[in-house]
Image (cartoon, rainbow, N blue to C red):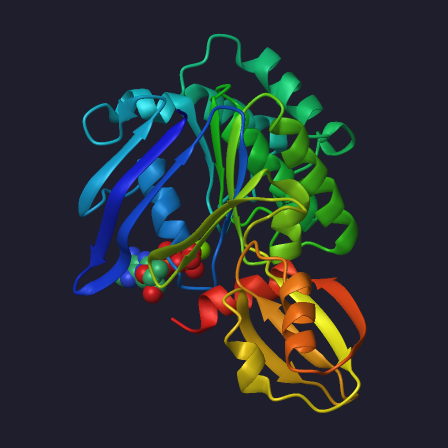
Length: 301
Ligand code: ADP
Ligand code: MG
């Protein structure tokens, strides 16, 4: 297991930023870490990368405890902090060589060349960091995180503030890096996480609210069926179907049935209609969008 987070809480004074969070990330997985602003994403990432101690619970990276074996964990983790702090007056190569020095790497020049190639900085490599566009600054931040060849990459909002082209560039870089490394990256954009990761973990107000694989079969999504009947229905009579979560009448006279997770509503709705002597004129299954799931999970609680 690359990352094992067990029952972690973090208090800032009296404020609980994390409240009993547990999750695991397997070797080679790309996991999207989602949540609205203030959910506790950055706090969790700082704990995993040994920038902050947790108040309780335990975190292990490749089997090493962040508290008792912190130097080992630091050598295994590459971390891109949220605001990507960089020295704007330094040249790219100068900065990356400086980072090599911090890790006491044996062949800094060679390693810097390699990182420039991996992160696609070749054309900009002779520039000062302050001269770079935001997307390229982000690449320098990722190069910095990768320089000691860590097994685990922690990227805190690596795509925030990028334009659409830069966004595509950084997303494909994350995917590419994920072939070799375990990646945990945070975002508050649902679609992005769906596009890049194997799994998503959602936290809200310091608590874990979802941990699911991404994909069409995602159990987070609920089935939504639009049903047209030949007459008005008595909604309460359909609501008693066990797999039905909610029913709403739409403006066009159709009814929107939302199922409980993993349920297929169609058979039971037809059966119930027959029983109540109403005719089903049509049924359309629409996939619930992942953004809706996100909203539902993070707005109610
Ligand atoms: P996210 O990255 O999901 O936006 P954060 O981990 O940055 O969330 O913050 C979680 C909560 O903890 C927020 O309410 C934030 O204000 C609070 N917080 C974060 N860092 C500190 C700090 N150093 N001192 C006090 N409160 C903090
Ligand atoms: Mg944050």
